[in-house]
Every structure is written in structure tokens, then in C-alpha cells.
Length: 339
Ligand code: NAD
Ligand code: TYD
Image (cartoon, rainbow, N blue to C red; front, side, top):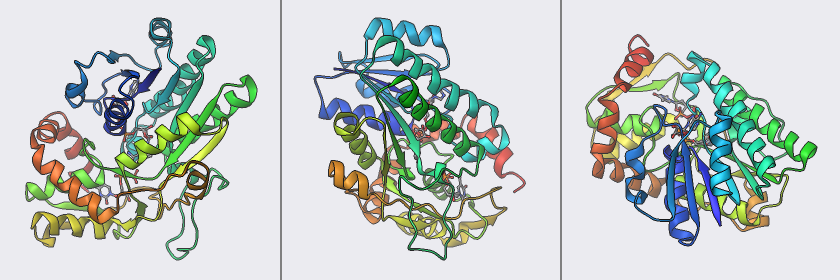
């Protein structure tokens, strides 16, 4: 069995590659990654010499290079993680989001059609559903919730999802889609909330909380997400969407306070800054479908997952310190300098 994993040098893709090589040591895993600012080849160092692993530096929008890889490897399954993934960057400059997230998805699906790939899986997000109000804790996203994206990022992911379902209906491409809530865990790029707060707290820098800090996300430990995708690509029904997440809702401010406590840092580092434009209020997943069809439930509770994550960042300082000391500094200054 050969599995193509696009975006495997990024946060979730890399965790998925480690997970798959552990769970299915006989599978061949081919990572396709353009190595954008978010891709980090050093993350994949532990598997580089595994004979069942191959890394290919390829842009998923590069049709010729993608077809060439399909020709060489003839994958059975494609799992598409590759994307521009940061909402704040999409607000600054949406174009690359449309290119990679929508056109890249199309190229990967065209390749699957051309080479007769047996399964194409699209890694999507709960953000395609828009947001839920804070005063209706009884509401959750189900697979029937209408698409109602808020940011250029989520609109680009929604556009990709629509193309995936169109390829299923029009060409009979065997697709599945997972829409997952916010992930956290090892190798999370330090521009995202949790790793950014850990890195800043360790450097005694201000902890920039957007708006009133009461926005809620439904946090999922990355390994739980990897397990869900493994189940979907093997046992999920073709043409179906599966929501992944559930019942780990936390407000941003409570997470930042938890991180301060874990690291023994004062809450006086917390600094409220100008809100994100169009900031989604609450995300919350109803995981009934994936639970009843595939037996999946999240295993890691937030209180345990955040401890493990903080420990990982303490034990792997070199990984993220290299990032925050490089080009990332310009990004940080631009986004937070005058906020
Ligand atoms: P990430 O930004 O950490 O990694 C993205 C990876 O894709 C990087 O390695 C990057 O180099 C690669 N990439 C970008 N453009 C590419 C291109 N044109 N061709 C090939 N590779 C390219 O992202 P992540 O957080 O790991 O997210 C992975 C996927 O999961 C994305 O599709 C994202 O929308 C989805 N998702 C993420 C979350 C989350 O909480 N992080 C939640 C739900 C869904
Ligand atoms: P983020 O990690 O960017 O994920 P997403 O926007 O995809 O949910 O942000 C998570 C939440 O944290 C979101 O409500 C925005 C907020 N946030 C801050 O308050 N400060 C920050 O510096 C960042 C990066 C995010």
C-alpha cells in the first residue's frame, strides 16, 4: 500500500506520517511538500532513512511534477494536508490561499483521476461552517451545517471542499473529507495560538490575546486527529464528510492562563490587543457520525494534552527557537508590532 501525504513537513502532516509509519510499518509513505515557511524538513529527520519513506519537494499546484510522482509511485491513497493554514496571513494576503488550497486540491484530484487512485482524502476544517454564538452552548457543527465561511482561509478551504464533492458527483472520484477542529501538540508552528503563547511566555514577552479573549475553539490533540484520518481512509464511506473533534471547548484566555500556570509565568504578561478582523466567536463539533460509523472518539483530554504539549516545547527548544529567530521575526513585527 502506498500513501501520498501532501503537506507532510507541516504540523499535522508530519504527525500523521509518524503515526502511519508506526501503525502500518509495511506501508510506503511518500511526502509531497513545497517547504513553504510552514514546512520544516528537520521535523521529518527521524524518518528520512526509513526505506518505506520518501520525501519529494513538490508544489501541489505543479501539475507536471505531481503527475511525474504519480507515474513513479502509483499511490493507492492520497491524503491532502498541503495548505496555507493561518487565518491571520489570509487576511493580509488571500491570493496564495486560493492558489494552494483550491487549485492545488484540483491538481491532486486530477492526478487521482488520471492514475486511477482508489481513495482521495481531503483534510478540511470546521472553519468552513463559520462560527456559533457564545450564548448558545447547545449548538454544534454537524455534517449538515451549511457552509458559511468567514475568513479568506476558511473560504478557500470551503471552495476546495466544494470541488472535492463536485469531483465525486461528476467524475465518480472516490473521495472522503474530514472537517476537524483546532489541533494542538508537537511541531505546531509558533505563529498559532498555543505554541506562540508558550514561546512568548518562555521569553517573558507579552502574550497577545485578540479582542476580549472569550472566543472558543474545540481543541483536539493532534494524534487523535491522525487516528481519525487513518480510520476514514480505510473504513470511511466514499462521498462522505466526517466531522472530527468534540467536547474540548476552551476560551482563548483560559488557555493562555493555563500556559502561564504550567510554565510558572505571571499572568501580567497577558496583553489584550486589537481583535482579528471577522474573528469567529465559537467552534464546536458534534462527532456523532464518526463515532457511530467508525468508533472514533477523542482520547486525550485538554488538561492532559496541554501538559504534554508544554513539555514537548520545553524538551524541543531547538526546533522552535530556530523558527522564531529567523524570517519569522519579520512576520511577528508586522503582525504584532503596532497592534
Ligand atoms: P501547516 O501550515 O503547519 O503545514 C502546511 C504544510 O503544507 C507545510 O509543510 C507547507 O510547506 C505545505 N504546503 C503549503 N503549500 C504547499 C504547496 N503549494 N504544495 C505542497 N506543500 C505545500 O498546516 P497544518 O496546521 O499542519 O494543517 C494541515 C491541514 O490541516 C491543512 O489543510 C489545514 O487546513 C487543515 N487543518 C488544520 C487544523 C489546525 O488546527 N492546524 C485544523 C483543521 C484542519
Ligand atoms: P489560531 O491558532 O490562529 O487558530 P484559528 O484562528 O484557526 O482558530 O487562533 C486560535 C484562537 O486564538 C483564535 O480565536 C485567535 C486567537 N489568537 C490570539 O488571541 N492571539 C494570537 O496571537 C493568535 C495567533 C491567536
